[in-house]
Image (cartoon, rainbow, N blue to C red; front, side, top):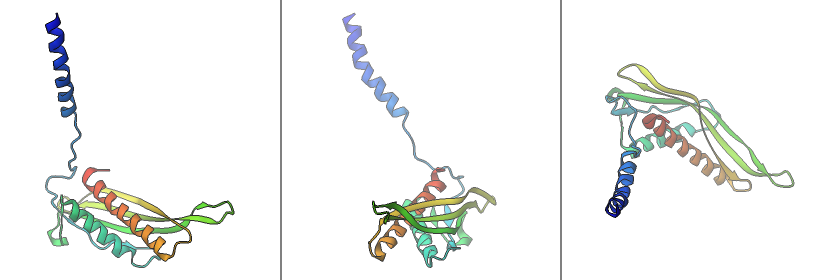
Length: 168
């Protein structure tokens, strides 16, 4: 009886470890196997914010390059294409102080994006209101707004890579 209890006590940690290891999450791609190369044309810009399309295109390209699961190539070499249109750029009040003066501003960017399998001619995902926003403190110089804009664009780029490769 005592021997059986000792064996059970020793086996329990091994069983728990086995269960934990076998139930682990595996990060992988949801892409079709033939997609290895992506083309990212310059995003279109339907807003009055000049140059935001260049910044977004550069950061999306950099995010895919850094991720290294898809090679960023020219259109003729690509298996898939990620294209988008910047459809919104808003700057608005986020919080107010006791005197009802703006304390923080919010920068929000909205992009219509689609990811197309060029070999199969199918849209793999499409989202008309892909959004990111960032805040900055009122009273900061122009640099506060620019930093918030860059942070929002970095979030968009990261989210586009995640949406393309992991499906979320």
